[in-house]
Every structure is written in structure tokens, then in C-alpha cells.
Amino acid sequence: MKALILAAGFGERMRPLTETTPKPLLKVGGKPLIEWHLEKLAAIGVRDVVINLSWLADQFPAALGDGSRFGLNIAWSREGAAPLETGGGMWHALSLLGGQDPFIAVNGDIWTDYDFARLPRAPDGDAHLVLIDNPAHHPAGDFQLLPDGRIASEGERKLTFSGMGVYRPGLFRDWRKVIGDTPGSLSDPPRFQLAPLLRAAMRRNAVGGEHFTGRWTDVGTPQRLQQLDAELATGPVAG
Image (cartoon, rainbow, N blue to C red; front, side):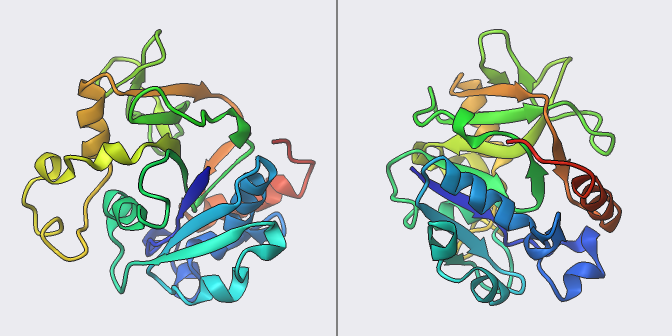
């Protein structure tokens, strides 16, 4: 099974730190955020990882090499000067991910002790999403997890999407019909968000998921980065 780490964003909320360093390469617990993911993926037997790049792209190969020191093969999905957003970035990377088989995708700017071994190798539907309790900075949540394990786009008890999931390339089968003719979608390569595709799949009952209650941080601000670094310095990390 292959994996995609989404690492192309500008990291605007993390400035001034991200003016010189892309957010996934900022360090917590003594190593870059993205290395926590690489080590966890290698531990569950993943050998091929694709990382999408845009902002300060050349820093990633310089820092991570070809992946061999993690027991991985790293391929780079370069998006150019402007990131392609979550949907466009994933679509652009599909050929490097094999084009047919399910793949893991994880945001490069989160930290978690979630065990990636829990992710299904073959999701029942187009996607399997890991949801978490709503953090203080996102109290409204994103999606509702139903009793049967399906995920709905609306509901009274929404949880927050963690940025971790498993996807089938078929999620993108009718992406242009779902996204419509927006300026980003008409560019080459196209730029669009993933959420509309997920919501369309949810209307087909084609998205499942789980509720994770362990440690998770969206490292979106310098303050959260500093807090997480301090927490990791105080004790062992599970997962």
C-alpha cells in the first residue's frame, strides 16, 4: 500500500516561521513533523510514499533524501509555485500512487499518536476518514459519524476530520462534474478542494470512518507548535 503526505501549503498562519521553512519541516520533539509520519508509515509496512510539494519545495529532498534512511522510497509530486489545494494535489499525485489501488493520505502539518495500522487496506466505499473530537479552534466540526460507521456531511453531532484517511482513486472519477467550472478547476494542473468530492461520495453512502480519541494536534500556529514541542519533551510517545 502506498501513502501520500500533503505538504504543499504555504503555512500562512505559521508565519514568520514558514517564511524560510515549510511547515511540515518544522521540528517538534526533536525532529520535523513530517518525519513522525514517515516513521509511522514505515512501521506498518508502507514502502512507497509520495509527498506533494510547492512552497519551498527544494527543502524537502534536501532534508529527507530518497527515503532510504526511513526504509522508504519517496517520490515527489511537484505542483509548481502555487499549491493545488487538497483535491487538486491528491489528483495530481494519483499517477505516482499507482492509479488504481487504495492509498493512505495524511496532512503533513498534523501530529498524532494514532496507529496507522488501524487504517483499512481496502475501504468499504470511496474513502475511510479518521474523525476526532472538535478542537477549540474548530468547534463546529465537519462531518457526522453514523452508528453504522458511515459518515454524513450533515448532522447535529459533527466531529472534525483529522487529516488522515484511506482513499480509492475512484473518488475522483467525476471530479470535474462535482467541482464545476471554477477558475481553479480550469487551470492546468487543476486546483480544487477535496471536501466537495467527499460530500458527494457521502450522499452515495460511499464514505466510512472511525472516531479517534487519542492525541492529535493541528500544528497551525507558532503557539500550537511550541505547546506540542513542550508536551513531547515531558514524556514518551505512544503509537
